[in-house]
Amino acid sequence: DCPGKEGIGGKKRNLTLLRNKLYMGQRRRTEPVVESTTSAGDHGNLRRSQSDRTEYSQKLQEKMAPQVVSSTPATPLEEDEEEVSRRMMARRVKIIAELMQTEKDYISDLDLCIKEVIQPLRNMQIARFDVDGLFSNIELVHQLSAKLLSLLEEATTDVEPPMQIIGEVFLQIKGPLEDTYKIYCYHHDDAHTMLEYYEKDEELKQHLRDCVQSLK
Image (cartoon, rainbow, N blue to C red; front, top):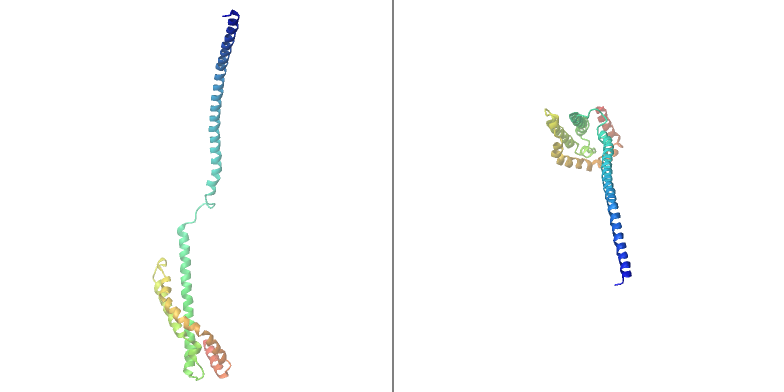
């Protein structure tokens, strides 16, 4: 009711309204700036992100390029698979031929031993000379070796190299080989001891020398 008080209250309200207007005006002036700044920042970040990805992609391609080049053989032409197969087959044929030649030589040696040593000593019929004990079952070894050679020749004669299967030959004769050589090896030490004893007997030693001379 007091005019003075109304004046004071009105001034306060006016100051409050003025303060609000100033705040709103300041907000309207600053908000576009903030929005513009934020928007520009987002686009800047987006542009930088795209640029980074492009740069990364380029660097990645540069790093990958040497690997692609290095994966290429140093030689201008790769070795032909057919050439490798041909060389391996030629080597296989050579090994089989060497195996058969070795078996032939072994059989020849056994044949000479039987004809020039064992049979003459048997024909002498020396009572104190045990021919079978000295040479064990060497004649069976000769027969088995001849059988092995025959099977090898059968598997390779008139047969194309890729079709020459010799492993089956050894599997087929595996049992007889084991049985025959078990006997020969079992008596080997006894035969060696027997030979040393015969060499102390001058008469028997001379018979052995004659046989060796006949072999030579």
